[in-house]
Image (cartoon, rainbow, N blue to C red; front, side, top):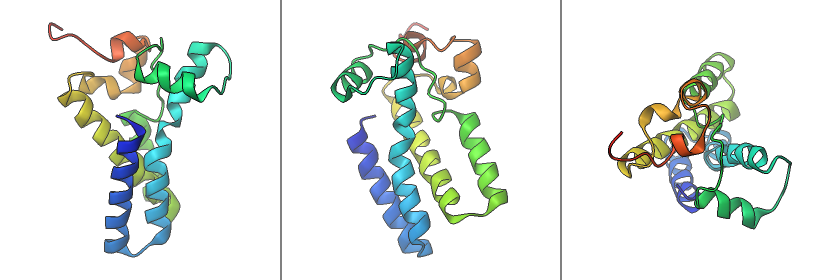
Length: 148
């Protein structure tokens, strides 16, 4: 899903959260983390480029046109979100709570959109599955065929 959509969803979610719980810290951290979770796409871009390269135009071109070879995406995984939620539960920090909410909702939206559009299977959001079964191959993680 494109960053513009995540900005809209994060803005709406953080506004609703503020209305319900009246916490600026949770609301702002939810908004920011709902967008910044996508920073893990840089990991895949850097792996693909074999260097830390900050070419924003090239980055968006390769991400949006499926030109990457790897799909590590550590933050876009059920395991990472579960760990984050558990830490948040025990630490009881407003900012960490907001980050957990933002990351979780972002992942949920990505999963729903990806499965509905038939560009990714639900199990591919497991980093263990991506690593052990798909070997972090981008072409096997995204854009599966109807015949699989």
